Each structure stands twice: as C-alpha cells, then as structure tokens.
Image (cartoon, rainbow, N blue to C red):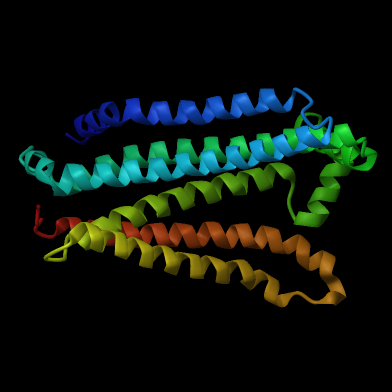
Length: 282
C-alpha cells in the first residue's frame, strides 16, 4: 500500500515541483547567457551585472523558501485539516502516510537544493571569469584557468595545492558538499514536519504553534551548527596555521555531515512517536 501512496503523492506534487525546478533551471540558463554578453565592459554595465547577480541570488533563495512552504503546507493540509479525515479513512497506517510524504518530499527537496547550489556555483564562476577577463587581471584569470583545468583536465599541481590547503582533493570536497546537502535537506524537511506534529498537540492555534516550534528548532539548529563550525578552529595557532587549516575544512564537513545525520535521526524518531499518537484533526 505504501507504493500506491508514493505514486499518489508523486502525481500530486509533480506538476508544481516541476514548474518550480524548471524555473530555477531557466533562471540559471538565462543568467549564464546574459553574463556571456560581456556586460562587464564599462562601469554602467558592471553595475547592471551586480544588480543581476543580486536579483538571481534572491530569486533562488525565494524559490528555495517556496519549495519548503509548499512541502510543509501539503503535509499539514493533507494530514491535519479536513483532507485528513479522508486520508485517514484509507486502509493504511498513519506511519505509511507519513513515510509517503517524507520520501517524495525529500526527493523534491534534494533536487531543488542541488539545482540552487549548482546554479549559484555556475553563476558565480562565470561572473568571476567574465569580470576578470574584462579587467585583464592575468593572475586571477590564470587561477580560474587552473580551476577549469582541475575540473576538466586534471591539473596535478593545482590538485596538490588544493589538497595542501583544504586537506582533500576537489572531487572529495564536492562529494562532502553533496553529502552535507543530502543530510541537511533531510534534517530541514523533518524539522518542518516535527514542528507541524508538535503544533497538533496544542488545543488552540495549532498552525501558529507549529510556526513557533519551527522557529525554535531552527534557532537551536543554527546555534549547534555555529558551534560545530567554530569547534575545529579552536585548536588553531600561528605556529602551524597551514597544517591546521588543511585539516579544518575536512573536519568541518565531516562534523557537519555527522551532526545533520544525527539531527535527522532524532527528528525522524520524534516524528514516528508523534504519528503513533491519537490524531487530533481540525
């Protein structure tokens, strides 16, 4: 029965999420094309380029927020409003309903996040390349060329320098970034679901309570993340800064992935416990 729920959830979310993700992709393509029109040739064009970059970043952030709101609103509306009465008359358990929402929601959340991050990286790289090319900054242009050779040509000297600085190869850094995004996306999605479930424990103002719980959980997560970000740097000293810095980034990503994975597990267990309670539908 879970398979049928997944199929239904997929069909219900596919249209809206496809439109959102295609819009993000089209924004990235449009920005890429505009940046390749040599808009850094004069001061006025440079100001326009800066405005374009800011608009692009804000647009991607907005679509990320829209994705979150849509997935959270669907979870709340389908399970805890008048639609919930119909959903809970189906021959399925509350946990099956929850897992269907979680699996499909996580898929769309990850796709949206990867598109946004990939778009920002591509947009930033092209913008930097075009700006340095227009300014004829040979050293910086050479650095960007080296980065291009690392990605597409495998420049061993640059890879070695990257490893000495960051403690890992570019490919390993990309892999850790993807792992961090996967774990962070699951934690973010579950944070919203747990907030909604906690809000249902209240007698009144459940939606407002859910928003309040989300804000509290978000702040706690940010405090923990900030502490973990600073933790690897507490051991730094001027005596061996290069060696410590090379291990800092690798240690940070490893710690971040582990912390988000643990947070996801805790939030998932809390969600399961709350879904097993007697539902109090509006």
